[in-house]
Length: 273
Image 1: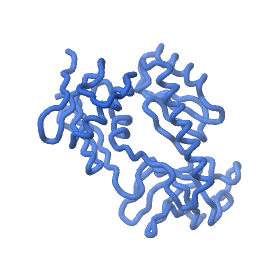
Image 2: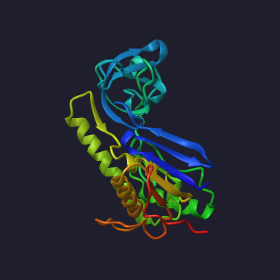
Image 3: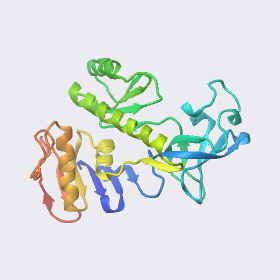
Image 4: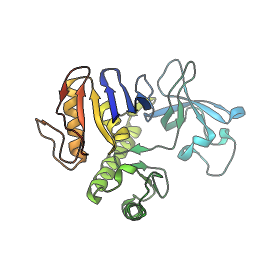
């Protein structure tokens, strides 16, 4: 059974299947989703649990942030009670790390991360890290050296497995895009009234492919013709091609079958044997 990604874009649900079993499931619904970035306002600081509740725009539930997740939000670098690190009505830039469940609001963090196709930019992070799934020592050395050279000052980089074998130019373009995204978030944070949503992965197709697609995927199932076109375009962009108005099949070197729910195949291409 081939490895496949099934995307129900209309319902914002996606899954990775391998040998008839779900390996990974993504459900992107609700007002607070994982990776959303908000400009919030501290409502309450609770010293008994070393945590604070942050208003991010939900009238019914505030977000929750623990002292260990404050990161750059600390008012003081030295260790101390959370009442010395956060104050009520303080504006904070936070990211959702766990979606709300039941009566509990979302779990928040001050350690912002921006995922790209090949790297993850951590604006308040340090150093360079590589995915543990990279096995080739020569490739690890190449990518580590490149990441050290291009890492923005005062930030951290995580090199993803998908960077293996990719040209330096493609990785640098990915970083440039993430830097522009971070600059936009910073501008909004200074000009937007809190609480407010500043950043979200609105393109569900792109988010799923960025986080789930790999070389061993040879079938992608989608639920509408427009999704087929957009999947092909994203794959072409990442393979170094240029998007065109009409794409009849995946780019050379990308061996994927695109199929509509529940109808006939569109732009089939069988994997190499």
